[in-house]
Image 1: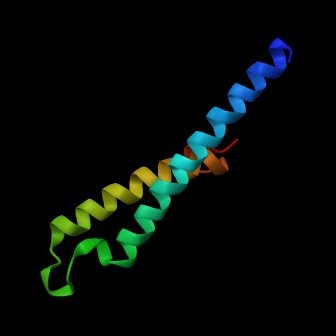
Image 2: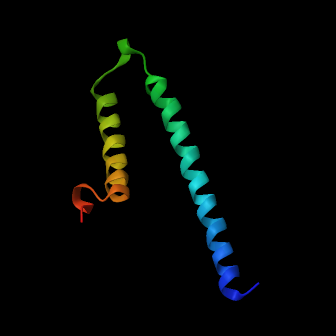
Image 3: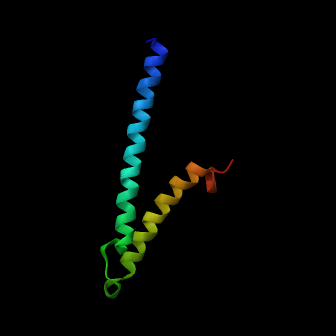
Length: 74
């Protein structure tokens, strides 16, 4: 195998590992969301709202980068 092919194989392996890590994080977030972030409707307060808004802002930053939207629009 040539050096270029070896580097490509290493890059592909690293890419697949990173992709799998993202998939696992998304699955965990989806499960937590389905469970209403482990809160009961009678217990919701503004702290919970702030936390979810913080999560949303971080996810928006990621999706804006991934889809070239928001401040990352081309």
